[in-house]
Image (cartoon, rainbow, N blue to C red; front, top):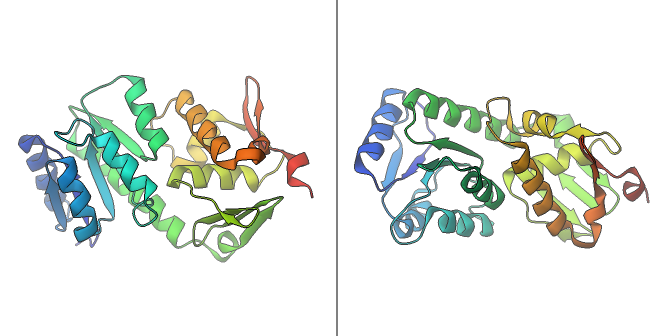
Length: 237
């Protein structure tokens, strides 16, 4: 019996019941349902979920606004989120990913696929929380310091707030200064090969990272037609 707590934020009763049924069938008895954005914000505080299924089309506060509030709060920023959306447009997915969501499933979906995505994301988060001794070492590159074990980052000694995906991407780049990573490689290395994301979404994430790096935005270089790399020049004192 799994111990993970799952929060289902979904206003369509049939879909909420479907997800609940399959969670219980697969051995995940600890779950709650919120049908509005306001209720979702309360449940995160009371229930402390390990993962959230988030419908983007909610009455009241929208799913995107709920996601934005969670990712802006250090206490909830690292909770993995799988977006549930009836829209298939790339723009909706990109907005959610830019806000810090970790995966998405388009309705109608197959319950087995949804739970497979959930388990894969929980495994990735578990590995991030319990890395090996080598992974746990602190990485110092130029003005950037990152701790893989605590998933904290600092820039010139000041805390740097990063989403789950942003941290993974920046750590991978900074750990290999000068190495060029294609967009596809960044997806596979930081999110896993089961993550269906477009190259445009990676570009959006890099843009968000550069905004957070501020005057050190040049730490991440664009290699036109290929991908991205961490600047060897900027990384050298």
